[in-house]
Amino acid sequence: MPFVLKPWLNRPYLDLSAAFSLKRLPSSIIISGDLRLNTANLAVKTAMLYLCDHPEGNEPCGKCKSCQMLMDEGLSHPDFLAVLSSTKDAFDKGADLSHRVLDLYENAEDSSGTSLRIDSLRHFQEWASQSTMGSHGKVAVISNAHLMPEAAANAILKTFEEPPQDTLIIMLTKSLDALLPTILSRAFKVSVSAPDVDVATQELLDMQVDVTYAHQALALSGYAPSLAVTLIKSGKILKVLEIVDALANTLSKKVDPIFFVEKILENDKDKKSSVFTQEERVQILSEFVLELLKYKAGITQDKLPLLLNVDAKALVYIQAENLFASLQRLKFIKGGNNLSPIRAMQAVMRDFVNSLMS
Image 1 (tube, helix red, strand yellow):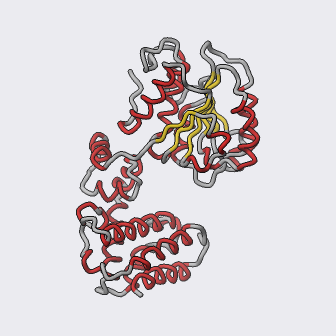
Image 2 (cartoon, rainbow, N blue to C red):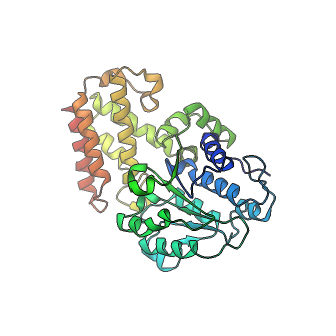
């Protein structure tokens, strides 16, 4: 059974596999893009191709022992190493390095509260210097490379400058800007872009997901179908639409601001039953403000998912400078204050609304 990539990963893979076939692939690769777009799958298929006993054109055979070990997410592959971002507890338990594809996938999908530790990268260097178990070399995938502090990057720079023979290093990062120029200059770089709405919606249909509110869920998920699925199946997308409606009615002065505040902070007194995290609230409000800016710039309402069912014309009075200022306020809210008492968060949300209406 072939290792099938998501449609938006096919072009980056073709670039990588073509360079490999022409023997123009250097010893390090950087894959940039939102890790929620399954960029780890792209790294694994590239590793399969590199380690495959009998590659068929630009594709791994999928039949040899190496391919089989990488296709079974729970198996360990001795010549494959995932260098994972970790919490201190996870690092202390040795969960920062793994030979299993499954651990790479899970780490790439959820890296909250983790960092890429210098000792993890030093252990990777030790592994890279060891002999290979198979006949085609070794592959290391460094997850969440954007979480690598400069000291850690400098510590492994020599590995990039003088890479071990027959060792491929793949780095997954949200942004190329987060990496040292000296590392960037030595790597083959590919970027992964989010799929357009039609491709992403088809992906949801293939997963047998109700797509009634697919456009809204995708817009809030960076057009990553795997995240949109969670929003839809959990019913959170319906709560989002209620918040958007409450905010639009508040800004058009149809209801008191407290109605919006209560809606977005629903159940917030009990953190365990709170509908949304602080980061999710910021994402909802940021997307709403960005769509309002686009509407004011002439984008039609049918192309703005969160504004689709609100009276957008009643909101054009809001000054663009107020909208830009509100985005800065939201960055501040996202940055901390997770332990603020509920009254403080109520005040923050009221201040957000008042800043738009002033």
